[in-house]
Length: 257
Image 1 (tube, rainbow, N blue to C red):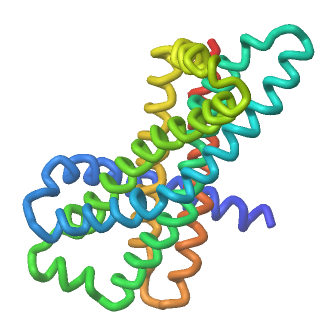
Image 2 (cartoon, one colour):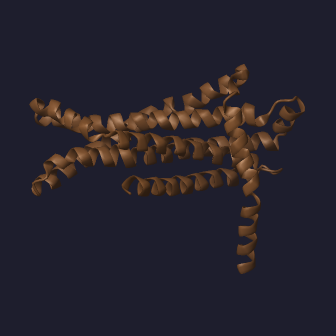
Image 3 (cartoon, rainbow, N blue to C red):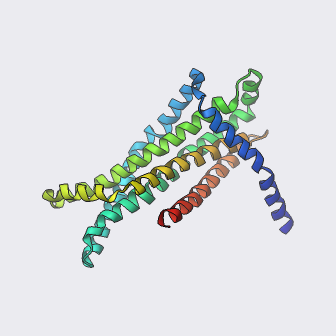
């Protein structure tokens, strides 16, 4: 058991230089991915699948969460005479924490598996070898558009989540007391500080990078057999979730220091 564990740890450490090289080349090629029309098409299709098609799901989830937090939080805070803190609660829970994390998990579930299995299938069918033989860089042609598409999608979906998550409580407030809607909106906007907004945006960008890097990296890790494809899909999701949680904890600790 110890021998197997040691071998696994050593194999992970041995892959670090390759992973760093993969990440570095992805960043470098992402600045020049618009050289070919096919790359632009891949980016557009990735945005369509990851961003556009996820909008209805994000709207339902964010509105439900924001409304639930408002109803329960307002009831509790009013009982202890601190009802004005509901605005800070909404901005911290919806905008700072739940927005980036839930969006990242949804994108991971929808896109990480799809990207990893798609690239894995291309490896087993020798399409990657065909690209290389024709002088086409797989990183530039396949990875960079997906890297940019997923990162941009998580960024915009996070903003959309915050909007819908704060819109739900505003609608509830309008139903209960229409005259107080303006005060509610002003309170929410004043509670979203530059620090909160910047941290939320930073998390969404980092989460998008983590998801896209894990998905493409594990997709290329397929060797010969098609039975490896489901395995790399699971690995991409697992590593993405782990990376999201670790980065989220690190950023939140820095936020409250």
